[in-house]
Image (cartoon, rainbow, N blue to C red; front, side, top):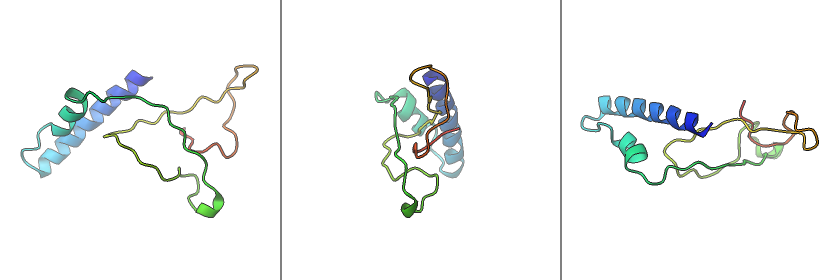
Length: 99
């Protein structure tokens, strides 16, 4: 899964570079190069966004957070029954759910 997210991110960042280069001559492939070619900080991490309360008025959106990356790929969580190992639906109030 990580390799798929990485390859998709590379394609998206290449497209961003193309669009920016059309507006800003001389941009070339700066974002792609810094993110995927030159960077030594290409990492994957597991994140959990806690549910927000109704009083916060954000609906199903995740709570506020900082993200220090160029691009973030979100994949669905795996919710499993601990006894059977079978897939189950996310519990109510599970936080950010990616379908």
